[in-house]
Amino acid sequence: MRFTGMIVHGTYGSPFAHWLPSLSHWARDAGGALYVPHLPSPAGQDFDTWATIVDSYRAAGLLGDAPAMIGASSGAAFLTRYILSRGLTGALLVTVSGFNNHRSGHQESDAANSTFSVDEAALGEVATRFTRRVAFYATDDPYLPTAVLARFATAITAEHRVIAGAGHFNTQSGYDTFPDLEHLLAELWPAR
Image (cartoon, rainbow, N blue to C red; front, top):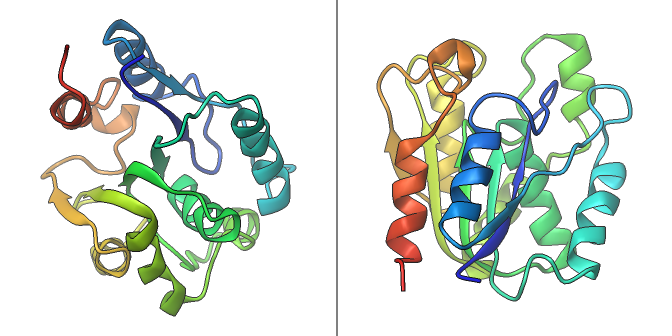
């Protein structure tokens, strides 16, 4: 198998929405595996619950020694806390509209995301755990201010990939597939 990893959806998300199933199928066809667990949200969404589910994939040996971890929206916030709390290392961390400790004013989503945040000063440690970090975000995200997205990308010392017109990288923004992310994965794990 060329590569393994996981895609973590965000609040109100699922493995069957937006570009997630397409990227998982693309990885399979490319000889890899990107697992997309169904994480409870918003009911039942908290760090410990999600971490237990991700732990089960690691315990089963499904993520390998140097996984690609991809977090969408609050899934990126979850992943940064998970990486730091579990000492996870890997080849690639990708965040898509990723943020840390942002309060939107929407009570339900703010409550659901509240257990994912980490101390801003700790975010730099992510760079020591993942060989490459890439942050995709857009300047027209309807849910997150560009400054919040850029600050998070900088804090984890990620390459900033700003895509015009991508919104929140969801179906409403035309993201049923994610060719830029497919290209990134193909660049890192070329066909053998």
